[in-house]
Length: 254
Image 1 (cartoon, rainbow, N blue to C red):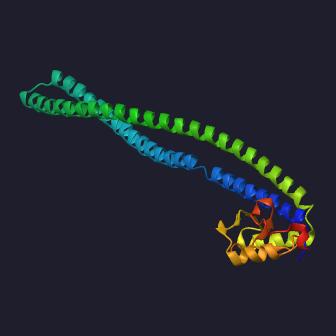
Image 2 (spheres, one colour):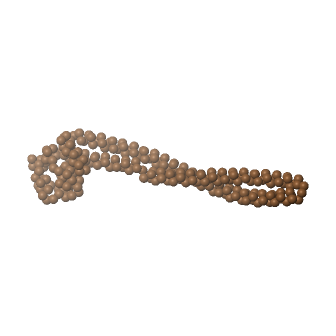
Image 3 (tube, rainbow, N blue to C red):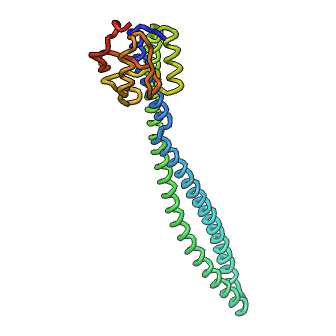
């Protein structure tokens, strides 16, 4: 294939812009992944689980306290009844029975009130746990919202940058002859690079110096001959930086 040297050099700009577009696309992907946001999401899940457990325990303790308070009220009512009956008792046997039952009821009240205090202390601790979990979850959600907004703004900037790069690429690519551009696209799709600058005898796409025989072949080729890099298979673009002098004759070689 033949192509003017200036058309071949355009491919370096196309390749550069393709590289930039790929880099921007990679950055967009990384921002979309949002490692910090993912960590916060996991933290939020853990906090919601912790809050659910603490809330469940708190509700259980509150129900148990309500039951104990009801039992205390019931036992107190029986004590008051027995006190009234004891005051009206006519014989010692009935009085002794009532006194024995009242002693038992008073012990029961003592036990219930002890349990009541323990439950109240437990409820206080559980309320603190619930409050701490709610506060921590609220902080995480605020940070998630902030980071989410920052991520969206960053993606918007990168998307605009990618559009600009693609627009510039399209403008330059439109100046490349169709056959040459098709070869560039084919090589880039197959091998990852479509064009490679030969600079100081080294192919930029592969980072490998051409062998003596390869350099000799390049020097012998006319400047409008389209060559492929022996290592990267990209179109090998020659410029004044290629290190082909004094043997490379440029247009005179045609």
